[in-house]
Image (cartoon, rainbow, N blue to C red; front, side, top):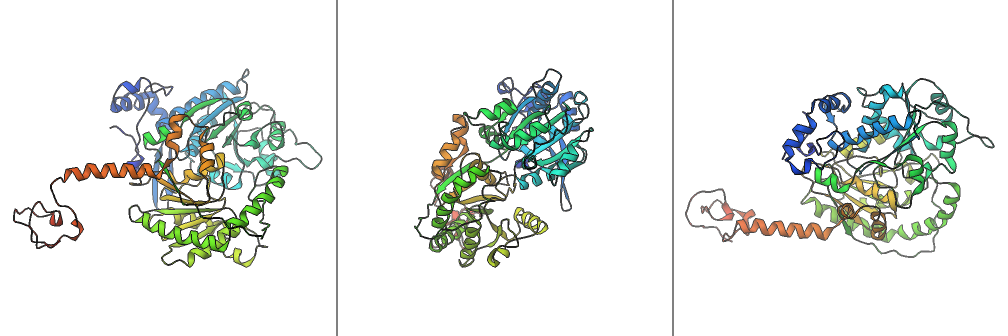
Length: 545
């Protein structure tokens, strides 16, 4: 076994180096030892100097400073992306750089940081402007925070708070890094979006490039192309492009580099995810709840919102009955305590509306033994009083986020609707209780919150209360056969593996009565008795079983 890491890396964060040649192809490395691959690949002078210069960042957490270095897939993926960027932005380039698929939890945001750091100073780009594009405000905030912590690699970045600021920042002829949501490319009523720059060295870097908002045939992305007609586009995604998704390839191009679930688990970059179905019965009700639908469908076009609103409201009413929520609360607390006997960690609860978030919180507080819980959701001053107590300022929400990430903090449960389901990284999180319909990329991104490496955590667990199994199957059809098998494992697989390992360990103690070893007594002195296994005497056992 051969692994690399930094001075501050815990052992689970050490990773293998998978390729010798500069292109990152693993064919040659497969026939030789991991140690030789590491020495010949990572410590080749050009590679090692490149790593030290462009692939190291520092992050602070209170007084502690962590030194973070790229893993093999990040190094090779980023360098391929840089080469494609030089090609696409050149005089004869097609401005389609491509798509980097690095599965959720494997450091996609850091890959974006390393990529931006290399091209911002690349002589062929001639002081480029990088537009970091997301489709959600919380993702924009998280990504800009990740870039802000990489001051050693990048110049100071600017975040466009409104449309006017975006136009001002992109009209500047000099280079830099600008963060924005795609929704800011909205023209004034009755007008077209103005052309801001015709420079060819503008690179648009889209997070989660598969989303429909990036299609150039209509909407915001059409206005983006009008504003920056000569810009080049690259997409980073944590989930694969759907086989019938032609628009994403038309905008960004084909895959540049792929690091899927199977490779991530093999390298120890992520842990497996297991699935357990615990469906809670739906009770029909005549009550129709007109939940604020704007946040639920954030980023969707108006006509899509109108079609979904009525259906969503009816389902929300059935899911959110008091009896059902109390049943879920009782089961959830009991399930979590049982799981905690074997594995310490925290849990996230996903609900389909703000009302259900609040009422499930109240139901949980009525369950004896329920740990400290917080609701994380958006809101406004017009919300009813029962919502107001769960609405926090940005500073307070960040404080709760840091508390939830700390293993020794008593905040154990968080209840969310949309927030923290993408871009949120809490390695201590090992269980997600799902009571919200989700599909496709949104579902795969959400469940990946539990796949982070943490101490001896063997895997994350998805507990399904509403019936997402069929949606999971449909979402997984976009993966290769091997990656699909690794993406989601039934809980029975983990139980079978546990039984197998138990049989192996039990064989070590063949002929020894190890039952009741936790009740060992000092009166026994036999070296063969599991009841007092610390002794070395050959005297017979005097313990009472």
